[in-house]
Length: 349
Image 1 (cartoon, rainbow, N blue to C red):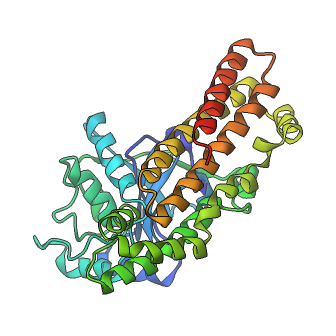
Image 2: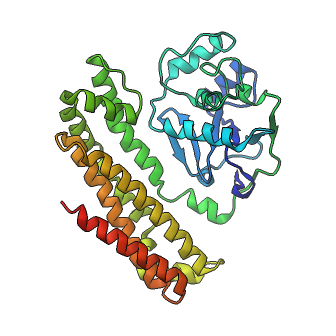
């Protein structure tokens, strides 16, 4: 099996693929193309729309037979446009997938007809992302096929972007996929909430729209809170402990560092950066939800993000212990841990 060579990929790369599944064959025959799926690479992750909806995933969890996936890069496109397109796609994370809209592409891809709904499918996501940055890969970004995305003259194949998977990567694919679990938990509440909202005259297609609708129409709060509690979404902060137990156990982390081929201190520094980013992102979300204490659903979401803040603080303590001999790293981590601790005391409920 093959996977993607992350070292060769760049932000904004378009990844096209096919598979042996029946739907893939139907799409390829209908489009007279070798591809049936499209993804956008965004710095160590890919954002794409599959039958579950729009989400990000680890590209190194993607395993496929040789010559069934290729990477394309737009030549002559500035970084500002690339970053804008990637951010557009990321902002659509949590959007609902639409099979009917995808089917309509066969009839409407050469037309000027605009999308009937804000729902997504794989090639629409990539085409709309680039169109939002002023780059029109296809005639109609709302209705298009995967293969058509790289018919643009600026799209060139990236040679060497795929390679045989290493034993470690094959093993990774067998481990628990926490991103997939988070995706399933998200749609476990988003789909029924969107349907409930539709029945009451409100259009909801994304996570952001669900929260905005609840603020605008507080009568939706009780159903949102109920669905969140039932879905498992509010316990998603525990998933990192399942996937990365070393982050929360000094002995396990120490053993992992001793077996690593790279510098232990580089690994610890990378973990420090990740931990700070998680804390800051979680704190930002916490403050947004905490502002509206009259909504029970928002109180629940604020508690979720505070739990993530606590995890990030705990990770700092472990890094501080294991990196004590690197004085510069130790000082940075200790400072971050102290600040996190102070913030958590201030937000104690």
